[in-house]
Amino acid sequence: MGELVASQGAATPAQPQLVSEITSELSQCVEVDPAGKQRLTITLPDRSALEGLAVTLAQLLSVTKT
Image (cartoon, rainbow, N blue to C red; front, side):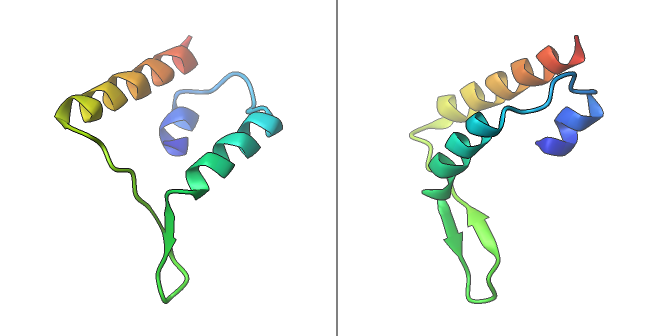
């Protein structure tokens, strides 16, 4: 996602406190394999949740374009 946002020319840098909060929440979804690689796993209740996530990400990318 960072590469997508960066390619859109994000105008404002991320706020460190917000990044910290999001990292804390996402870390609850991270599994570490025996090699030390991290895997982010998010369980979605149904197909509409995936579509909703895609819409939200598209909106975020649209904001960075303006």
